[in-house]
Length: 56
Ligand SMILES: [Zn+2]
Image 1: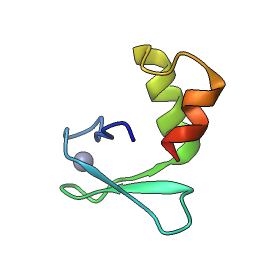
Image 2: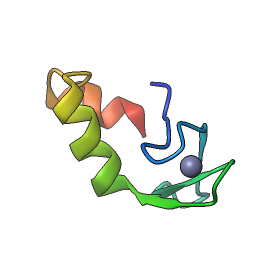
Image 3: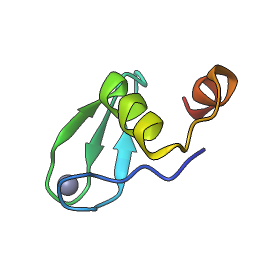
């Protein structure tokens, strides 16, 4: 699983139980799965759909 980081404070994110979102341990910001995937795509961390699926 890729390391998920908050793009606001840089804190580590903890996935919600339903896997649809992640909450920052530091600032409490909630990041939706959709938002995280867009962010990963922008950074080039995700090369294809199979890798995207494996993250969650
Ligand atoms: Zn944060």
